[in-house]
Length: 295
Length: 252
Image 1 (cartoon, rainbow over the protein chains, first blue to last red):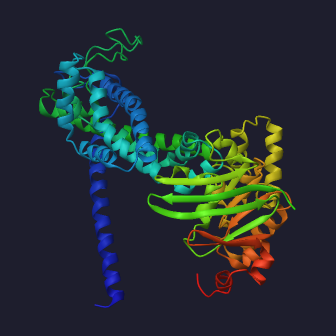
Image 2 (spheres, rainbow over the protein chains, first blue to last red):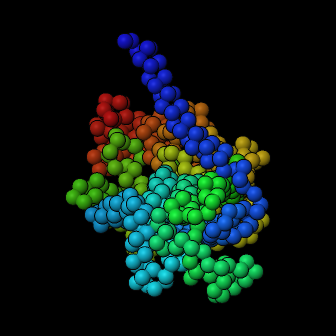
C-alpha cells in the first residue's frame, strides 16, 4: 500500500470513529429530549412531586439540585483553587508532592457510591447532620475536589513560564505574579474545569442517595430565613435532587406516570445543564475580556 | 569617563556542584550598550540574570562575590527586590506581553510602583510606547490584547513596559533572536536611539548585531570572562587569540 492510499484509509477510519461518537451522543441526547420535552410543562416545573397519584412535578427537586450545585461549588472551588495554585506554583518537585498528586488521581477515580457511603458514615451518622443538604454538599465536595483540583492545576501550569519570569522581572512578588498575571491567563481553563465539574455535580445521584436523602421535606417558598425548618435555604433539611428523583421513580416509584415523570425529569436535567454551561461560558468570556481586553 | 552603574566583583555561581560562573569581574558604564557574547552555555545569560537576581528562584543555586548597583550590594539582605527590579528592567528572548490590553501592560509596572495619578499614567504610557517606537502601531488599539500583535510589535511593547517605570538599566536577553530580520533591525535602531538615555546590557548570539549597536563587548567562554573592552577594539584587534578565533567564526 502506498503512502497516499494509507493516508486516505487512516482519514476514513478516523472519520468513521468520529461519526460513531457523534451518533451515540446525538442518539442519547435526542432520545432524552424527544421523549422528555413534550411532557415538560409549567405545571410540572412548579408543582410538588406526588407520591401516589399521577400528575406530580419536580419543583423542589429542581430547586434542590441548583441549591446543592451552588453550595458545593462555594465549598469546593476555593479549596480546589488554593490547592491547585499550591501544586503548580509553590510545591517543590519531591516525593510529598508526587504523593499528593497520586492521591488526587486515585480519589478522582473513586466510585461515587463509595463517596456517598463514606459521606453517610461521616456526615450523616458521625457528625449527626442527618440526611441533609449540607451532608450532600460535603459529600459532593469530596467527590468533586480531586477532578476540579487537577483541572485547575492543568490550566495554571499551561500558562507559559516566561509570563511568570516577566512578572518577576517587573518587580512583582511571587503572589502578585500569580494573582495578576497567571490566574487571568489561566481563566478560560479554570472555567472549563468548573463547568465540567458543575455538570458532574448536577447529574450525580449515587453520592446523594445516602447523604442528601431521597425524600423531600415540606418546603415553603415564602420563607427565606435559612434557619427556619421549612425554608428552602435551610441546609439541615433532607433534599431530593433531580437525578435522585429519576433513580427513585424508576426503582421504587408507585406513581402510575413514573415513565413520563422520569423522561421529563431527565430532559429537564439535560436542559438545565446546557443552560448552565452556556451561561457560565458567556459570563466567563465577559470576565476574561474584562480582565484581559481580549476580543 | 562615564560613571559605572553596575560593577561585578568575582561573581561565582553554581547549580548544585556545577560551577557555571568562575569569578566574573565586569563593570558597566552609564548610558552605554554593553554586549555579552560567547558560545552557547558559556554563562552569559546566567550572568545577565544575576544582575537583577532572576536566578534567586532557581533551586540549589549559590552565588558568591559582589554586585554593586549604584554603590549598593544587590545581594545584601537589605536590598529590596522590588526596588531593584524597578531600577533594573528586563526584556526576554520570547516576547512576553501579559494577557491584558496594551495600555494595561505598560501601566502595570507603574501601578505596582504606586503611581495612582491617571494623567501621569496616560502620559507615561504614551511616552514609553513612543520611546519603543511602537506608538504609531498601537495608538488606536490601546484597548486591544497585547498578545494579538505580531512578534516584533510584542517585543517593542515589552521594551515599552520595561521603560515605563523609568529604569536605570535594562537587561536584554537575546531580545531579537526570536524575531524576523526586519523586526530585529527595527529594534536595533530603537536601542541605538534609547541608549542616549538608558544603560543597556544585552546578551546576543548575533555578532554583527553586537558590532553594530554596542559600545562595549564582553566575551564569555566556559563560565569565564575572557576579555571585555570597547566594541571596535574587540572586533578589530582583540587581546586574546581565542577571542579572535570566536569572532572569526572558527568555533562556537
